[in-house]
Length: 182
Picture 1 (cartoon, rainbow, N blue to C red):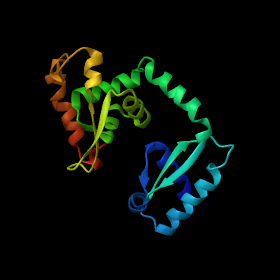
Picture 2 (tube, rainbow, N blue to C red):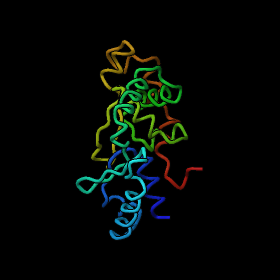
Picture 3 (cartoon, rainbow, N blue to C red):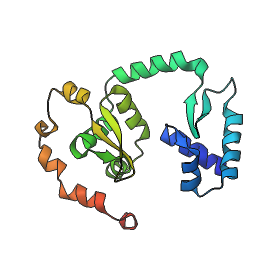
Picture 4 (cartoon, helix red, strand yellow):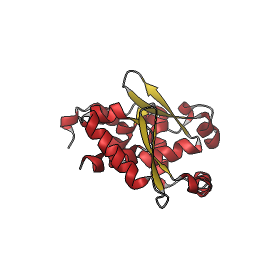
């Protein structure tokens, strides 16, 4: 069960996670986390697996098998140059109008997990991720490339920017205590 949970967390985050953070957030001992990581590596780090577990400097991440690197790179490049999907456009709109905004806040507004969408928007260069010292987690905001792509110089020039940026109902939703959520 622990191995499955750690595997799911690694898959969902799609970025390196410190082992100490896994221990702390999942309330597990160092030994239990180590055993789970070793089990995941044993199952995935084989030639016939398209996914491998990479471990470096006290962090772990699920990555594609290096032997598939060229194909994966071509696919991602093609994916990043195609049209944006409706969920990507929704997420990008939320970031443009409400940013800087955290992933949990985006997911609260959209009602679904946004990990892959955020990754794809980062790859395209439309958004930037920065660590917020007050919120103690990454926040997302649009990039200069995004502004250039939509043909504007300032976010404030977006249609009805002020009304959406300061919308009271959205602010109320984002400021709710976790136990208030239904």
